[in-house]
Each structure stands twice: as structure tokens, then as C-alpha cells.
Image (tube, rainbow, N blue to C red):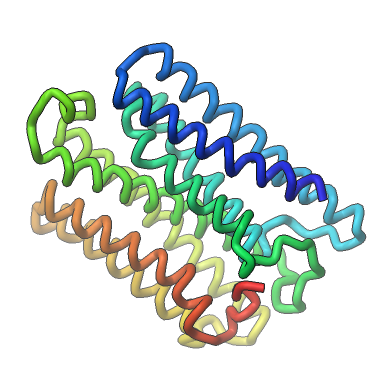
Length: 277
């Protein structure tokens, strides 16, 4: 199907964007910056087109659901959220060097979705539990949160590496600005994760007759929520800053990855439809 071909091309384009941002870091030429930025904008537009085309092709097959219902589609949307949030940050702070640490997340997620034999890319009818208008709200809010947490993880890696002062590291934002960026992206992600958990609970009540079932996915989502709640609590109440917060940010994203991938591969439960195909 055309949407799968286009999204496969998007994977390689994200790899190209990463290499361009790496060239920006190495050579520090303004022309590389512009090429990297415009290439990422073009890739995101093509990525968006691929998602919309998948939705249209779903309707043509007589299935007609939003492309957010299985592991492949959620991975595609996850990468889309990362690229969108990154471009917003680059535009706001006018620093292209961050792309070398953030865009790889979008590329790796797209590569896994496009080329892993464990991921089923076919458009299939929805399971009865997924036939709800709450599905779109739940998935969009959760993956906007995951995208923000991926960006914060990339920024945290830069922060920890930037401990060494020197000509090379001075191209990145000052540590105080990185610290503030990490906080802002996590506050954004935490807000959407909270909304995602609430909309998921409402959806669960309609699908399974209970707001909360301590399903492994629900339990690990709550653990992830507590990790980021701890981040915000320690920053606002206890005054933690900088290195401690960068470490907690990375731990939080590891929890996100386990909630998303680890639970799917290792644990069974009500969310088993999200397992690899």
C-alpha cells in the first residue's frame, strides 16, 4: 500500500535529517543548518501525508478507522510527535544543534516500525474494544506526552555531556537554558500523560466495564506518571535543578519505553492488541 511505502521513505529521510544535524554540529556552517531544518520540515510534511493517506486507504478498504489502533500506527504517530515538538523548540530557541540528539529518536522509532518483522503494518478491522471515540483522544494525548518525554531525554543527554566546558560544547544552549527546556518539555508531557490516563480510564469503563483494572499497561503508565510527578515535585518543592533533574528525566523515559515496548513484549493483559503482530 502507498502509505507504507511513503512511511518507509520517511524513515530514510529522518536518517538524512539526523546526518545533516550532525554535520551542523561538526562543521557549524549556516547552510547546513538551513538544509537540516528545511529537510526536517519536508520530512514531517511527508510523514503527515503518509498518516492521512493511511486513513484514506483504510476507508477505501471499508474499514475506516483513524490510524492509531495498533503497534505500527502508534509508532508512526510517536515519531511524528517527536519531530513536531522538536521543530517547535528549534524555531523558538533558534538552536539547530539539539537536532543531533533528538531526531535520532524519530528515526529509530520509524525504523523499528518500518523494518521490524515483529510489527504488522497491515490495515485491519478494529477489535470491538477499540471501537470508541475515546480511542483518538487517548492515543493522541498519550503520544504527545511520549514525544515530549523523548525530546526531554535528548535534552538531558546534552545537559549531562555539556558538563565539560569547551569550544565544542559551547555551541549548545547554556546549562541553565537546557535545564529550563527539560522542565518545560516534561511539564508539557506530564499534562498530556495525565489527560491520556484519564481518557483511557473513561474508555476502559465503556469497553471493559471498569475505570481501572491494574492491567500491566495501566500499572506501568501509572508508574511512569509517578516518575514525572516526582520530577515536578522535586523541582518545585525541594528546589532540585540541573544534573539531578536530567538524570530523573532519563529514568522517566526509560519507564516510558518499558510501558510502551516492555509491557507489549513481556506481559499480557487487556492491552494485548498492542502486541507485535
